[in-house]
Image 1: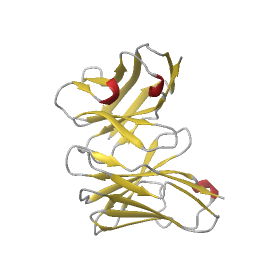
Image 2: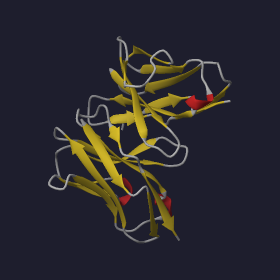
Image 3: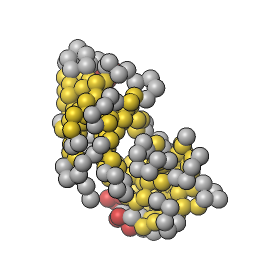
Image 4: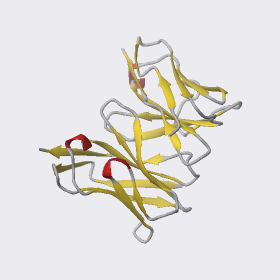
Length: 113
Length: 114
């Protein structure tokens, strides 16, 4: 079984500031980890994924995440927030390749001008 | 990347009627598709796994007679919400397993039952 915990359902940052969205996972087998972004009234867009290769994963829109097995974490970061980054972000885990993804509760990111 | 098309994007229906949502993989074959539901301000919850040519596998607590899933071809899975009620109003989203590096998600369907 697998699960995801996202710390902080709402995060506010100033434009230009560092974005840090936290995610911890639990999995009985080596996990695949994902970050998705959802804009209002839209579907999911994959930001990045970890699939047991490099532990530092770079994604779209300047986001990256680091897989830390010892901490069971997969935090999402971006050096400088843009207004367009305001959205909801979901961390997800899969223990079966790319099937049956289990999502965290989501973190809504607000970017303050 | 691969494209999954979900239709309709929004639907409003009267209570007691049925609504069909389609999920199509446009440029790849998907033997397995997944249906999720997202309640307001909550995460996505897996409802069922749809396998081409066989019966869907439903997660615990999901009524299979209410949420009918058909995966008749390698590119199409449908979810029919039967006898819809206001509490079925939600955001439904599908994903398709490409057999490659990720499962691709449709854009979702906002269902409102009035």
